[in-house]
Image (cartoon, rainbow, N blue to C red; front, top):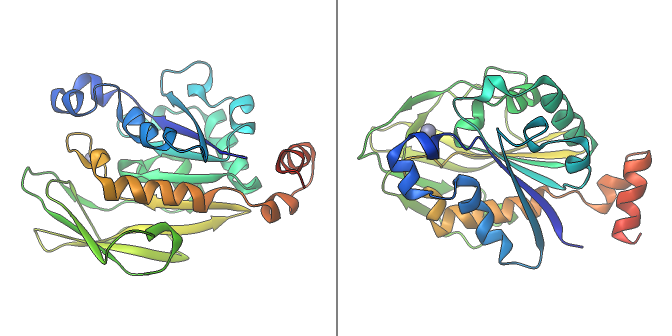
Length: 246
Ligand code: ZN
């Protein structure tokens, strides 16, 4: 069974910011979704803030989703309560969630973390980010060398106000000397949660092969397993088990 992925993106910056429009003419969500669509291991849907109803995150959609990838920025506070509640419940039931870049301030991530999720930041044209692998051998960093470099990114610096991650898989250093826990995992209920830092809308990070590989690896890792499905009870679980042929 393919992993059913929903790539959710606010979808506003690519229309309003010229540099973002040039880099991501079809939206950040399409830049992230397109490489996943090349694999038979995934079925990929997309939604944006303006998708109707419920920003494209209805119960029906999420019931048919194994992993959500979430990118948000200026509209995060306007995401509807019903959507945040639904996402939270689905993660607790076992759905995977990959939170990207400025979505550290998304309502769903803050809800799941229970902390402010604040950090330091700076945007300049010449900020170089080096992402260092701190857990070699982990499936989310499979195929990644001991580090990779993004020549242009926004700086995010510690302190990143999140609960201590279960795993810290990459740490970034920046031109200004700051460091940041860039790739972290948590578990909430039966669901796996991943935060991955790169992805400022005016830089080309979602065209970088290493960034896309980490995202694909994270989707595979965060997808519900038969065991996590079996630990739940109710109709949804039964459907999942039926679908998994077990
Ligand atoms: Zn940014």
